Length: 180
Image (cartoon, rainbow, N blue to C red; front, side, top):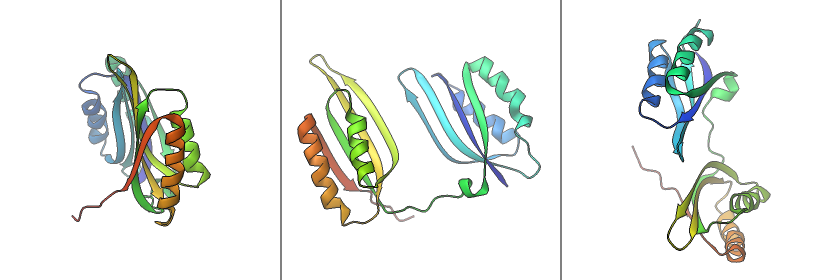
């Protein structure tokens, strides 16, 4: 089976996930990994799907175009090489880093720069700006892979110094895996 990356974005509204997944289902495709979210008033999805042998992306092009017009979306499909479509094995132990404090420019950059300088891979980031009657706040959650558990103490110190200098609160904890 061939694998493809599909993206779609547009004004948030009910029915986007159903419309895209229906098109894939009707063409015998199977959704694998995906991430879908609402950001402010926009909705975005990014997903990998498997297509049956002999399937071509052009076959669903017309249906996607109709979906784009009806739901006000922007979509695209990219074929993946077989090496790109294989599930990646984790390159370390997953940890969650929580960052929160007053909103200010540079939070994402400075935290991600700290992680990159230690060669720590970020596998997921979610940010959210909050509004209160007193001030604007900022929340960022990152999922990262620590290549070795020995790195945790040093990373905690580095993040602590960064947080202190920016007036932020930062915490890190390992992701506990449930047994299925």
